[in-house]
Each structure stands twice: as C-alpha cells, then as structure tokens.
Image (tube, protein in one colour):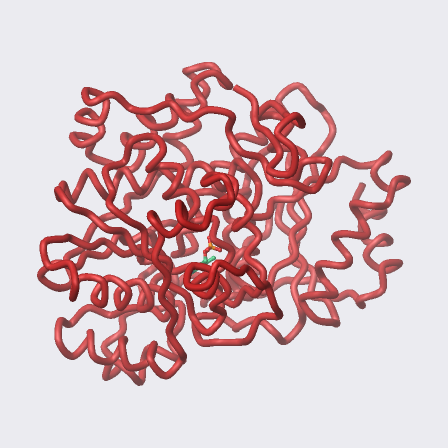
Amino acid sequence: MNYYSTKNKCITATLEEGVKWGMAPDGGLYMPQRFHVLTRRELEEVRKSRSLAETGWLIAQKMFGDDLPSGVLKALVEEALNFDTPVVQVSEKIHALELFHGPTLAFKDVGARFMARLLQYYNRNNDRLVHVLVATSGDTGSAVANGFLNIPGIKVHVLYPSGQVSPLQEKQFTTLGGNITALEVDGSFDDCQALVKQAFADEALRSEMVLTSANSINLARFLPQAFYYFRGWAQLDADELVIAVPSGNFGNLTAGLVAREMGLPVQIFLAASNANDVVPAYLETGKYTPRKSVRTIANAMDVGAPSNFERVLDLFGHKHERITAHLKGYRYSDEQIREIISTVQRQTGYILDPHGATGYEASRTYLENHPGTTAMFLGTAHPAKFPEVVNELTENKLQSPEKLLNIIKGKKVSEYISSAYSDFRHYLENIS
Ligand SMILES: *Cc1c(COP(=O)(O)O)cnc(C)c1O
C-alpha cells in the first residue's frame, strides 16, 4: 500500500520511503491510502486476544500486511510489544487504559520500539551505519533512545537542553550507553532542534553519513499506536464506549481515529488538553489558530501548534461539522489538574499522572450527560515520573516501579557541546 502527503494526494511513498523520510517532500504528513476495515469475525478475534502483542499482530496484518513479509511483521510486533496495556477500573464507569508499562513508562514506547525494529529491517542490506538524530525537551528522547537501544546498525544521538529537563528524564537517556549518545547542549530546546535541522540540510555531511529522524510524525511511530485502542476495547467489551485522550501533538488521538476507520466500535473521542487549548478552541469556533505554547505541569502536552492536527483535518475532509461529530474538546488549568489528582486519589485510591488526569476528568464530565456510556481514558505516563507534582497531592502514597528506581541509580554520561553548529558538526565528523 502507498501513503500520500496531506498537502497533495498525488505525492505518494511506500512504507519504507515514508519511514525513512519522515515528512513528505512537500512538507505534508503521510497518510495511508486505504484503511482495511475489520470484518465482524475479525473483530471477534480481536476481542478474544489476550495481550498487546496478540492484538497488535491481528491489527498489524490489516495495516502493514501488503508492506512486509508476514514472518517479518510477526517477529517485529512480538519484539516491539513485549509488555501489556492493562485496563484498570477507576470508578464505576471510568477505566484507565494504562499505556505506561514499557521501558520508559510512557505510551511513546510503543511507537518508538516499533519504528526502531522497522528501520533495522529496512536497513538489513545496508552496511552503512544509520544515525538517528533526535532533539528532545524530555520524554521523546527517552522513548526513542530506549526503543533503539542495542538495535544493530543504528546509532542514536539525543540532543537536549542542559539544565532544562527533569533529573529523572535526563537519567532516562544518559545512562543507557551502547549505541546511544546523549549530547547536552548549552542552549534551549529550540537550539537543539535547530542543530538537528541544520545537520539534515547539510548536503556535504549527508553525503558522508546516513541521517534519519525519529520524530512523532513518522508513520512508524504514529500508526502502531492504533493497536492499543483495540487492546483496550477488547478488555472492556462495552457496548457504548467513549475514549478520552490526553493530547499535545495529537498523534495519539489521531491513531485512535485510524482505529475507528478500521472498525473500532467507539462512539466519540474526547480530546483532553491542558492550558494549550488550540484544538478545543477549534472544535468550538471552527477557527484553527496555532500559537506559542505555555508551560504547564502536564508538560508533554505543552504544544501550541499540534503537528498531527493536519492528519485529523485530512481524515475528515477539512469539514468542521464532521470533525465535531467524532471529537469533543476539553481543557484544564494546572490548578484543575492538581485538584483532579487529589480528589481521585482520596475518593478511589487511584493515582493519576498530570496528563492522564485531564483524560479522567474529560470522561467524568462527558458521562454526566451520557449516563448509559462507559469511558476509557488513556493513562499516557506512570505517575511516578512526576513525583514533584504528584507526591504532595496524594499523601505521599506514590510508589516507584522497580524500572524507575534502576534508572535513578544509573550513572549519567553525556557529551557537552555549545549551541554552535560547527561544534555539532565536529562531533558528527569524528564519529563517522
Ligand atoms: C507525548 C505525551 C502526550 C501527548 O501525546 P500526543 O500524541 O503528542 O498528543 C501526552 N502524555 C504524555 C505523558 C506524553 O509523553
């Protein structure tokens, strides 16, 4: 199957090209030309599946069956999805789909692990090292670095702003070693991004080394996220289901819309935002006005111009009334997010993270007017990743999983560079 650019349907790529290029040459995002809709019998099979890998394999055959040999796809799915995404009941009608049981305790593990193995496969006949450059403000770096850890033929270079990521986030990509190098940049996140962009635009450099990006618009990170929507539905088996998605760049939510195109029985999606509310504002007014992001305690959702929104518009033919039929928007201030975490812990004992909290509250609000419905919100990260916010709100009942404790114990190793391109280029020349 081919993938077209959201800017021009005549511009197409194979899966391999789409994954290697990331963005279409005209600056659009790739979308599948067709969605294979699951038959009733196939949906029944999905409903009976018992792990994320099993569900993922059923959906992956429909999604990538034309693109990859079946044995390759099966092995890839099983290796990438080696953890589950359990559904946990929080209150009578509200359930959490916990996406944080992978190595970095956030949902981005799913897409990053899938992408790493797909790139390894496409690179199998190439004896040149592939260099993945990734700029991060915190969470993306750890998911990508862990996803690619120990993948042969690939080296990852994580650029992050010195002093501007949390100590825990920093540990998640500076303690890995192996094929992962952390570059601590004397500058801001924007400086890191600018360095990566300059490297990609550097023709001379690119004639010497193979460079790839692994950002969240990449097809190989975006599409596999549809798997866990089916996995969540299979565990809940509710007749009237709504799904709430804590959103920033809207890749996660758009993957839910893809699952719906493929036949996932869901009534409506709830887009939960923090103070960065361009999408809820669009849903209310029909006007889309991207702007600079503001900082919040749900910082992985601090996005002022959500890159995947173009995919949402494309899916629904840019028709506001079609979009609002499938998507309802909610927004929460930091103060409200704190209140939600504290109230839910007191009333139910369940500890939310600042991102999941927005999804919980969107579910609760929606159910007030739709009592016959069952809600599932995506728990996008483990609450122990945000101890500075969550601890005091939950009477210090927060427990860190073993995985996190091991990361904290690790020794930080990074290379310090200035924000001048010449320094970064020098570093790259020396490793190639
Ligand atoms: C990345 C992230 C989000 C936002 O996901 P998008 O796909 O960008 O909308 C939400 N919560 C957490 C914890 C994240 O890391």
